[in-house]
Image 1 (cartoon, rainbow, N blue to C red):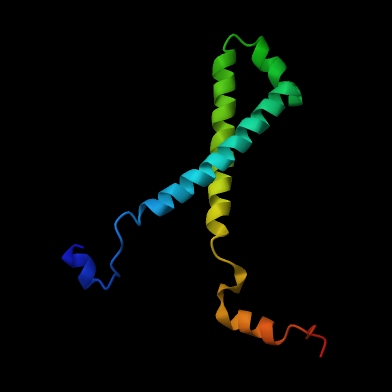
Image 2 (cartoon, helix red, strand yellow; image 1 turned 60 degrees about the vertical axis):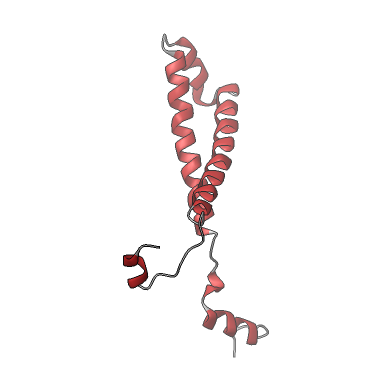
Length: 111
């Protein structure tokens, strides 16, 4: 570990530790990617809003389809990664709240 990190009081890390978060984010992005492919295919198949009809009538059908799937992939991938990060913790991370809930579980607050 470089000297400037040790002097900053940061704990030592195991080699390869930084790749865990990258793997976590890529995994969640792929979950969103699968969802986006399913959503895009179903949207085109059922011709929601006439989108397949419009794409098929265009001379640039492949560009239209690429842009549709690219936009949906970015949206669903971002939502999936955001949800994964937000689900890392929980509301009961606050020990004071968790203790109050555990000891007062039968109290409905209507003293």
